[in-house]
Length: 304
Length: 304
Image (cartoon, rainbow over the protein chains, first blue to last red):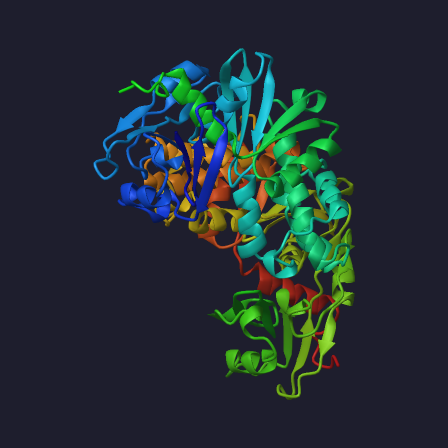
C-alpha cells in the first residue's frame, strides 16, 4: 500500500509492504496550501512507479482546504472508530487505485476548555497504539502547533494544542526582538536555553517574560547568538508548565514523535524538568496508515 | 519651551508656555528608526517657526539607536534623580537652543525578575507625579509593549513590560490565525472580547488559548469579524491576570495613559475585572518634560 502524510506545507509518501515495513519514501514541499484544486495530479506524480492499489492519506488533506473535508471524529476514540470515519475518494485520474482519507479528531474533554482539533497526528497516535499495551501514555508531537495527547486503553483520550512553534518563529523573525538575535537556532545554546526555562518559572507570565529577551540583549547578559536558544527555552518551558497534565508529566516519561531536529529542544526541556523521554520517528505516520488500513480490512486483496 | 516625544516610529513636538500649557503640537511618522543620523535636521524642520530656546526630548531618542545614548537611571527613582540624569546635547544646527534629553529607567525590583527598561514613559509618569499626592498608584501605559508602573511617595517604585500589543499584531497579521480573521479590530466586538477574557481564565496557558481563535473560527462559534476582538480580550486578560500586582489591581483603580483608541480595550478589560480606571491623555509626555525642566531650573531665563 501507499501511505501519504499530506500536511499544510509538505507532502510525504511511503511505500509499505504487506506487513507494514517501509520500502521506499519520497518527500516534497507540495503541501495542501500550494496544491489547491490539483491534489489528484500532484499525488499521481508523487507516486510514479508505485503501482500499489491502496492509497491512504492523512493530514490537512482531510480539511476544508484539502481534497475533501472529512468530518472530525470525536475523542475519546479507538482506532476502530477512526478507521470507520475514513472516507473513500473518487479519483478517476488514478485508475485501479482505492483512495481513502483518514479523519481528523475533535476534542472537548480537557478541563472543559474550548474545542480542540487535529488532522494528521491521529494517524501517528494510531501507530503508537498499535504496538503498545493499554497503559496510559502522554504523547507530544512538536511542530508549528504542538499537539499533546493522552493515549490509554487503546483509545486517544484527549489532546491539546499549543502554538509555541509558531509564536517562536514570529518572534524570532518578525518582532522587535528579531533584530537583536541571530536568526538560526542551530546549534542550540544549552546554557541560554536553560536560562530561558528558569525565567519562565518566575512571576509575570509569558507576555512579560518575552521582554527579557530584549533586556538580556540590551544589557549584554546574553550574546545575539544565544537569544534564540533563550527564547526557545522560555516558550517551551511555558508550554510544559501550563499543560493540564504538568504534574503528571514531571513524574512520568513522555513519548515524543517528530523529526530529530524539532524534538531536540523538547527532549532537553523535559529532561531538565526530570521527565524521561521516549523518541519515535515521523515515519509513524506511515505505520499508522497501515494499521488503520489493516483495521478495516482494506489490505485484503478482495477489499472493494 | 519645546517638548519632544520621539519614539521608535513617531515624533511628536509640543510648544508650551511658561506655566506648562500646551499652545501648539505637531506629529509626524519620522520616528527614531527612520531618522538614523539625521536627528538634528529632522528636529529643525519639525519645529520651524517655534523659537523657544529650550528643547527637552524623551523617548527612544535617548537609546543606542537615538541621538546620544543616555544612561538609564535606576528605580526606585524620584523626579529629581531623573532630572539629574538628563543629558545636554551639542546641536550646532540648532543655534541659540539648549537641547536636553531625558534618561530612560532600568528596574530590577519586581519579584527579583529579570531587568526591565523603558524610555519615554518616565516622562509621562513624571507628569502624573507632579500633579498628584504621594499615594500609591498603579499606572498602565498600553502600547506595542505595555508598561505598568507603581508610583508612590513621589517616586517611580518599579515597572514591568508586557509585549501584548506586539504579540497581538503579529498573530493578527502574520500568523496562521490571520487568514481566519478580518484584519481590523474596529469596531471592537464587546461580546467576543469578553469571551476571549473568559477563555484566558481557564487552564492551559496563553500558548494553548491562542489556538482557540482557530477552533472558534473553524467551528463557527465566532464570525471572522469577531476573532480579532476575541484575541484582544484573550491577550489583555492574560496580561492583567499575570501581573505581579494582579490582586491589588482588582481592588483599586488603575491610571491609564495613552491615546483613546489604544486605551479602550484596556479600559473595558479592567472594568470587566471590577477595576476602576482613570484616563490620562498622551500629552502627559509634554507636561512631564516641562515638570522635569522646571525641576532642574532650565526654565529660568538665565539657565545655561
